[in-house]
Amino acid sequence: MAIRKIARLGHPVLRETARELSREEISSPELKRLVRDMIDTMHDYGGVGLAAPQVHESVRLAIIEFSADNERYENDDGQPLLVIINARVKVLDETISGFWEGCLSVPGMRGYVERPSKIEVNYLDERGKPKTLVADGFLATVFQHELDHLDGVLYVDKITDKSKFTFNEEFARYHAPEAADEQDEGEPE
Image 1 (cartoon, one colour):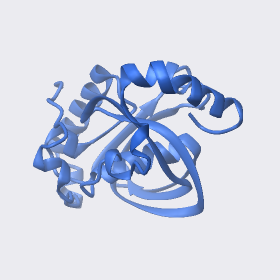
Image 2: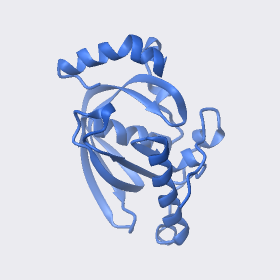
Image 3: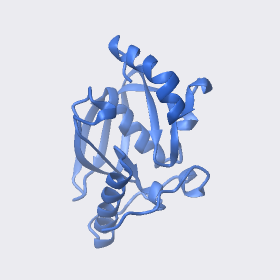
Image 4: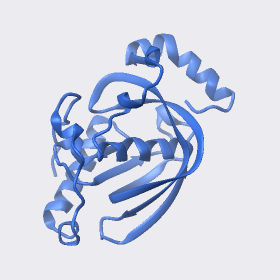
């Protein structure tokens, strides 16, 4: 197990379309090691998700995990560790939800992104077993954010109001109260 270096905005691997993993690769010791390294890396950097291209591996693999008591997302139920391989996303509800997103590949910044509020994700787990998951709200956003990485898309590409793209310090000073007000009114952070 190891903590891997995170690819940052500007590195070409973040703009590639990642390739699917074969059945043989899914059961390989190399993939198991990559998954362990990604988990260690995500925990070390304090992320809630991580896609393989972010650790310089252009394959269709992502992980998601966060606890219900996470300070940044305290109103969510949390998500136990999921290993997501060769995922496909289907939008179930076109209604838009907006969240302030950050990314380990775009350190120190945050932007307001609107995405479909409810999705279905079909994927293979770490044993290669087919799984289907329906996600809405914040969890749907996390899935879409991480799976966008597999298509060479970053959250910064999805920001429509450029005045809501900011450094974390300015977010805390100028936008966090607004985000809290929106949350109090039933809108996501």
